[in-house]
Amino acid sequence: METYLVGGAVRDQLLGLPVIERDWVVVGTSPGDLRLLGYRQVGSDFPVFLHPETGEEYALARTERKTAPGHTGFICRFDPEVTLEEDLQRRDLTINAIAEASSGELIDPYGGQSDIAAKQLRHVSSAFAEDPLRVLRVARFKARFHHLGFEVAPETHQLLLQMVRDGQLRELTQERVLLELDKALSTPDPAVFFEYLKMLNAHIDLWPEITTDAIAALAQTRSGNPAFRFYALMLQLSPEAIRNLCGRLKMSNERRDLSLMLTQHLGNWHGYEDLTATEKAELVIATDGLRKAERFSQFNAACEALTETDLGKHWLTIRELMAGVKASDLKDAEPGPGLGHRIRAEQIRRIETLT
Image: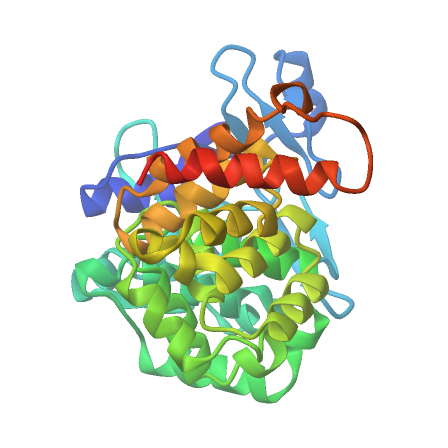
């Protein structure tokens, strides 16, 4: 049995980047042998095991054969006869197909080190085209390594164009598309991800609602928070487009509602100094600030990030003043149709004391 460090950990070491997690490939053994050694199996589609001491993932060397459309339409073969080179060949890009032996020797049958030196994102083999998710993965790696000068190799770019033209992206589940989108928002240059997919015309099948202006707004956003970056992308879209996109990609209601709230109210939020006390109260009510204090705090934080201001503290003070008004504070607190108006008048009066 031989074990090799593989994939992103080897790549990032060669790039001089921090290694976040380490994955291993095991060659020349079987699932039963690993279980006897105390490894805990967690994979369902193919055997993946957790090391009994480190908890790191160890996968048996395997090959894959396409049998059906989509990201999961593969049959995996894993047995002691599968070689390390066969396992590396099924990987997407050459820079991800390098292994390191326990001795420190690098096994690089597909030229990953040369492509790292040349800053090229190049597919390993023609089997790359069997998995449409790799279109998004290449775009994500381009965004991740854009600051290092990486570009997609010409032959890989042509292959991606063909995959898009063939309609392969329509095989993907919306859950997988959303997962890649969210991962891309955590890269150093997320706008590059959307720009490159637009260059491939992949956006037509993925998210036709996301416009060039939206991508440009994302590129201008300084925040590194993935959620705030997403809201920057949504700011340029119509409410209908936001609802369509969030619904199709099965995003949470909270994400959709905050996106809509920001598109509708960010301008007034940012214009705090020019609003009357009544208008300030109306914004808190319109954003459901009195009923959902936590979401109002999230709204404030997103507004601060998108406008690069610190007005949130003023809006939280307004919200607390309004929430603090109780019927018992009023001289005439008798219940009736006018009580709500009297409470609102008192809220506005208290806001006026701040200005």
